[in-house]
Length: 123
Image (cartoon, rainbow, N blue to C red; front, top):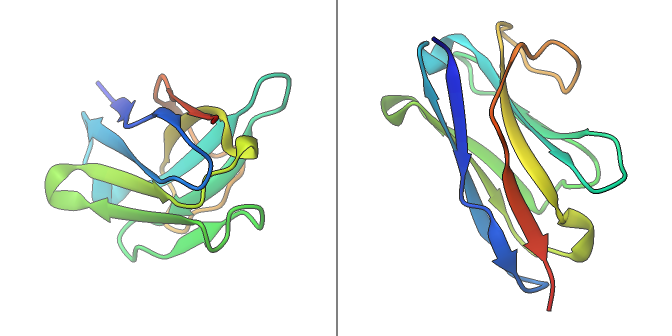
């Protein structure tokens, strides 16, 4: 059974940092590309970053380049999303998702989703 579980969200002040984790089970992490998406209240879901299977190439949405860093630890079956210089526009539920593709994109190819973790940026 494929399962993705996010953690690491919380309430943080503007300018702060968080590291989100996505623990995968039921499949070999290295066989899948993993993406991070977010959905803010009243807005559509937005892809923010992904990391490709096997080769580990990364991709970022323009809105988060320079502040978000995605990485994976295959031994722990975990993908991380480091978020720095948080601002109010980063407030959202963050989801990780898995796609059976070699090179990742932030499109509709993700078949497996976690339940999400809430990130709130507020002073």
